[in-house]
Length: 261
Image (cartoon, rainbow, N blue to C red; front, side, top):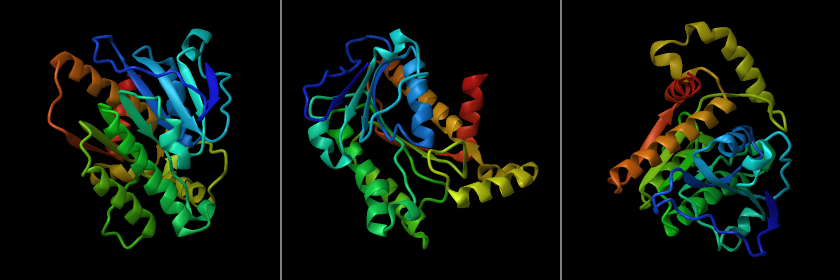
């Protein structure tokens, strides 16, 4: 495993088009609730041949995997404002984006939009430019560019922008209220999760997508969906028509259960 600044010469993960089983990956957002779980899963997944992480602060690798698994990890320390320069020598079959913040943390709408719209879109354009097979991103339940709620509208605008890119496959994960230990607590989410747990028994049928979901389960679903997509492409030996795939919270939960048996 190596941690380097974005200005140093970096190893370049290669595409799997040569017939080698599995895929190479790039992850942005590895220190968040979903991203930290996804990082650990990617490192331990034998189908993932390399994991490149773009992060602005160092990552503690203890407990992420065994020594032989950690050898496929490359950490690039750089600001997302320097994304193009930092990733100049990088390519990946799958680009994962788990970036996200809140107005409270971001302080302003402009800062929120940068994290939840501008950075993910820049990563998607990187994926398009470097011929990645798949871009996988987390938005939110209720995301819509026509929403009167600023948070949901920004997420929806990102989804609309992604639909205009020429990436072979785009996976959009739309979880409901997230459960799990965060580095910084979010009071609103904590209260909402507590209340939702009490109503969980009533959230069936059409209401099932409103059940709170663990960040770890979202990560697991992202990993499984990516693996299945890449393996199917390898079996076909060709790319299918470009498509966007949406995963609402109930479908995410189904995928996570399928993964764990």
